[in-house]
Amino acid sequence: MLTAGAALPFYNEPALAQLSKIENVPPDAVMINANENPLGPCVEAAEAVHSVVSKGGRYMYAETDALQNLLAEQEGLEPSYVQVFAGSSAPLHQAVLAFTSPEKSFVTGDPGYEAGERAAKFIGSKVVRVPLTKDYAHDVKAMAVADSNAGLIYICNPNNPTGTLLERSGIESILQAATNTAVVIDEAYAELSGATVIPWIKKYPQLFVVRTFSKAAGLAALRLGAVMACTDSIALLQRAMPPFPINVAALLAADAAIRDRQTMQRYVRDVHRSRGWFEQQLKTLGVKTYPSAANFVLANFGPEGPALFQRLERKGILLRDRTREIGTGFVRITIGTQKEMERLVREIKRYR
Ligand SMILES: Cc1ncc(COP(=O)(O)O)c(C=O)c1O
Image (cartoon, rainbow, N blue to C red; front, top):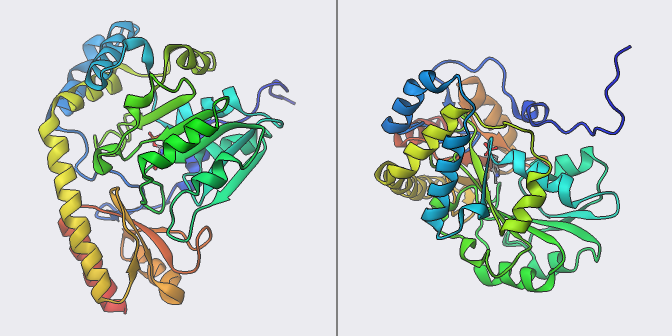
C-alpha cells in the first residue's frame, strides 16, 4: 500500500476548500455565499489573462518581481517586504507551519475565518480560541494574554464572518504586548474597510499583513494574494513556500487590477450603497444585522432562519448559514449586485 512520508503533515488548501463546496449550482444562481466580487476581473485584467498564452513557456520570475515591486511602491515599502502567493489562504497555512507547533499555539478570535485554525489542527498545533466580545469585536486584551506560549496571533480585520472592524489602537496593543509572537492581520477586505496597518510593518518586525485579490479585485479563481512584513520575517515564510506557486495569468491580472483603480473604487462604492440599502430592508423586516466594514453582512433570522436558508438555496440563492458557529438563524450574506440583493429581498418577503 502506498503511504505518504510520515513527516509531512497533510494540510493542503484544496482539501480544505472542498469543505465549503456546493454541488449542482444552477447557472442563474445568486452566489452570495463566498464574499466574491460578482463582476469578476476588470477589463484590463481579463485582457491580460487572454494575452498570457505567449508567456506560458517561461517561468515567471520577471512578472513576480514586477508585481511585488508594484505592490511595494503602492504601500511605500521596499520590494523585499512583499511576497506574493497563490491566494491568501496559502500564506495563512504557511504562517501556521512556520510559527506554531504542539507547544506554540495558534490564537484566534471566535468566530473568525477558519483557514488558519484548520491548518493548525491538521499539524497538531494547539489552538486557543478567544471569544469575540458581545459586540463581535476582537477581545484584544484577552487575546494578548491568551497563551504565554503563543506562536501566532491571528486577527481577521474586518472579521469574517461578523464584518466588524477592530480599531487600530486594539491591534497596536497586541503588537506591544506580544513582541515575540507572529501577529498576522488578515486584511482580505481592506479595500472595503479602508483600514490597514501596513504602515506599522517597519515598526513591528512580528507583524504580517495578509492581502488577497479574491475579493474587491474579483480574481478569486485566478488565485493571488500577498504578505507584507519586514524582510527577515518574510524570509521565515518563504522557507515554507513551494518553488513556483503562482501562475503568470494571476500575476498579470493582479498587476492590471492594481493599475485600474477606478473599477475597484466603483465596486467599493456600489457595495457600500447596496449594503446600506440591504441592511435597511432587513431592518424593516425585523431582522437584526451587525455593523459591517466588508462586502458581506451578518444577520440573525432567529429560529426560522435555517428553513428559510434551505428554501432560498432551492431557489438558487446561496447564503452562508452560520448557525453552527454563531447560533440558530445567523447567516453571512455577501453583497452581490443590487439586482441580486433585490431578488433576495423579494424571496425573503415571500417566505416571511
Ligand atoms: C478573511 C479571509 N481571509 C482569507 C480568505 C481566503 O481567500 P483567498 O485564499 O481566496 O485569498 C478569505 C476568503 O473568504 C477570507 O474571508
